[in-house]
Amino acid sequence: MGNDKNQILVTSPLLPDLQEFNQYLQQIWDSKWITNNGSFHQQLEKALAEYLGVEYISLFTNGTLPLITALQALGLTKGEVITTPYSFVATSHSIWWNQLTPVFVDIEEETCGIDPSKIEAAITENTVAIMPVHCYGKPCKTEQIDAIAKKHGLKVIYDAAHAFGVNVNGKSILNAGDISTLSFHATKVYNTIEGGALICHSAEMKHQIDNLKNFGFRGEVTVEAPGINGKMDEVRSAYGLLNLRQVDAAIEARQKVANQYREALRNVKGIRFFDDMPGVRHNYSYFPILIDEAQYGMSRDALYAKLKEQNIFGRRYFYPLITAFTPYREYPSAEPENLPVATKVADQVLCLPMHHALSEDDIKRIIDCIAK
Image (cartoon, rainbow, N blue to C red):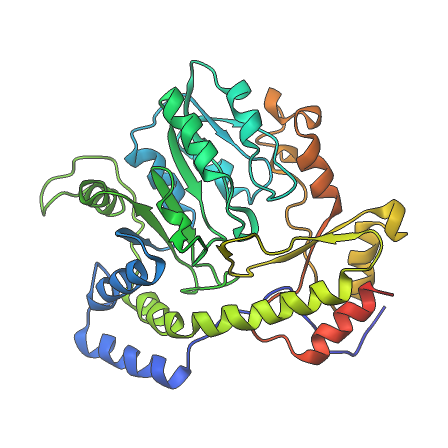
C-alpha cells in the first residue's frame, strides 16, 4: 500500500552544526594531519573520559573493533566465553574472530540482559570470560556478574554499545568488569558517524590497547603483538567533539518521547514496556515494546506491518536471536529450549521510533496506530 505521509524512521542521527564542523575541518586541512592520534583525537579522548566519568578511554574507528581488541588485550586466545543470544551479532562475532567459543545463556526479562542466576551452570573448565550486554542501555546486574567472575577467575568484558552516558547512583556503568566497549555508530545516542571506544582501568592496559589498535607497534621500529588498525581519524574526532556538546539536550528530548509513549500506552492491553530503573540515569537509546498477541489481538509482526503501511518504521530489535544465525545455530547452547526468555522476548519485541528530532505530530501518528 502506498502512503504519502512523511516517513518516520526508527532513528535519526545527531548531527553537529555544519558551519562549526567546517571551521574544525579548516583546522584539519591547515594542519594536514588527518589521522594517527592528532590533536582532535587527543581532545576527544580527554573530553569523553571527563563526560563519561572514566579514567582510561581509547577511541576506535567503529564499535566492533573494541570488542575484538578487548579479548586480545586480556590475552584470551582459547576457551569459552559466556555471552547473551539477545544482542547485535557483533557481540558473538568478536568472540568468533578471536577463535574462542561463544556459550549462550538466557536473559532476564526485566533488563533483557544476561541472567546472572544462569551463568554458573554454564561455566566449565574451558570458560575464560563473560561478555554481557547492557541491552537498550539498561544496566545488567554488574555486581552479581562481577562477583561470579571473581569467584571463578574469569575476565568480564561489557558490551556497552547502547549505554553511552548511563550511570547508576551517579557512577558510570562503564567502570564495571575488566573492560567495557562503546559504539558511536550513526544510529546511537552519541555518534561520530562510525566509531567506538574501549574503557579500561589502568594506564598500562590503555597503553597496551593503544598499541594493539595501531598494528601492535611499540615505538617506531618494534612490533610486539599482532595488532589491528582501529584508529579513529581527525575528521570523526572533530565531529565527535561537536556532538558531545549537544548530546545532553538530545537525551533530554528522547526522554520526553519515552514519557509520551509510556503515558499513551500504559493502559493498552497486551503491550508492555520498560519503566526507568531506580537510581539509573538512562539515555533513552531505544523504546522497545513487547506485544502479547493473545491480549493485544494482533501479533508483533502484524503490528510491524501495520506501522509500515503508515510509513512508520519500527525495528524488531533483537530478532532473530544470534543463535538462529548460521554461524551459531549448531552450538548446543544455542538450542531454543536453553533460551526460553530470550526466545519469547525476540518474538514479541518491537522498537518504536526513538530519536531527538521526533515531532509531536510524529509521536501522535505512532501512538494512534498502536493504540488503535
